[in-house]
Image 1 (cartoon, one colour):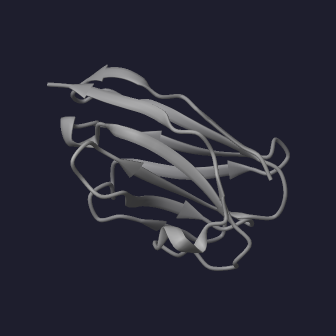
Image 2 (tube, rainbow, N blue to C red):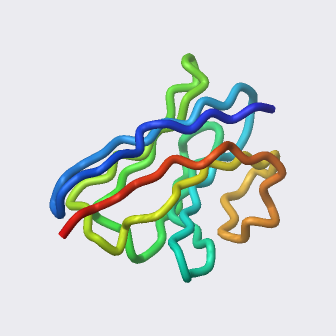
Image 3 (cartoon, rainbow, N blue to C red):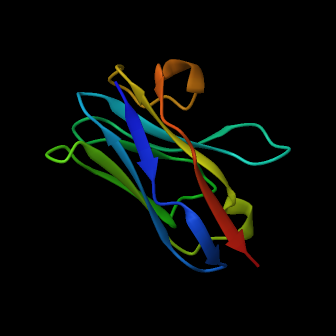
Length: 119
């Protein structure tokens, strides 16, 4: 499966961005981010049906994941962005039914999209 991530950019603290991940097929989608000097970390995930989501504590209440299977696209609405949210964001797809925060469970990865939040 090919994944296409988009939507990154430069915003000021408190701003918003919406990331998109085009992924055809019945996959659980997860978003991860990787900032310089830090380990890659799980951000948010959603099952194929959209009935289950999982958020990292650091983004709860600020990020919202959704998907439109008619468009084969998953979205992450990121509000109230903080400088610590700056990173390259990657979407990944898993054939598993559950959302797993471990990146090793995801067999398919898209290219990253850079998010930069200025203070």
